[in-house]
Image (tube, rainbow, N blue to C red; front, side, top):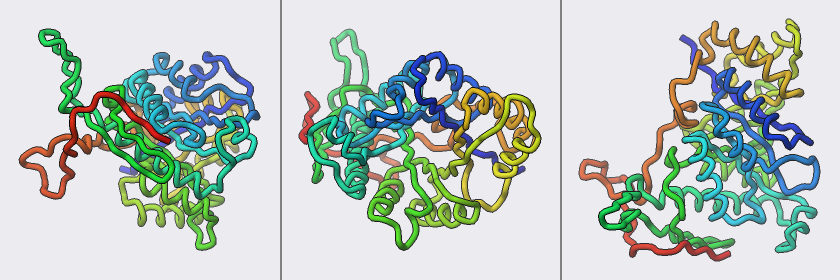
Length: 359
């Protein structure tokens, strides 16, 4: 039996701010049994669009299975706040949250905050890598059984199972712990955009830094590549650097039609079913989201299912389930007696009281 594809789609609809629009699109994606949807965001004034994380939190209770992955920039924001926001989305969606990491590269965005001038892209992605590291540590800072809710003693948590993270880097330091319990997924899925050109020998410093962040932290890479050969070369290099656990989805335009259009459908199906591309699936960018996602659910998905390339229904509840990713253990949890000797042990710290952040 052929290996099933991992498919996702962008819901980007500049100028649309009504939650009903995005809920409708997400339900179409869910009907097509996609792994997740993304919603882009930035601090730029144009194009006008809603806050991605808030919009997906709003539609979380209106959907039941599809993953929800907003773009959240790490520039001009605090990593502690970002980690809490993504964690909250994971709770609101019952374990379906992800985070598409973004950076802010323009002078206009820097002026909007007035805190610092725009930085080179390689510095921004190095900062992003540190921000994701902080978020992961904060998500781990509550062990899974830290929340005890013992009414007899009046204790909400077991203080010995909530940990400082003590992160110190060149751009900020965060002591922790988190102020929210560990996310349902343990750690929400982290996605990083990478272009094939970022892996070339003559890649820009920003491209190299983006790849380094992806290799270090990504569960999913959204890969921009001009053709199948470039996809294969880039995917092979990413797996050599990051390992087989990385999920690589190639970005692909989807321009279909409301009425059956055999030529358009076959063009997309030819890309989706092509072998030897080295990727695990595709991240679709609809030209017209309502039209194209409906066509995907009604015409493309059934063909893929008939070929054994797409699930007939969701078998798991979380985004990690959809992607075939294991739920990670907290790095701070005590190691079981029968665990391998090279497993990370719990960090010895005093019982924490308040989260501390210094930037």
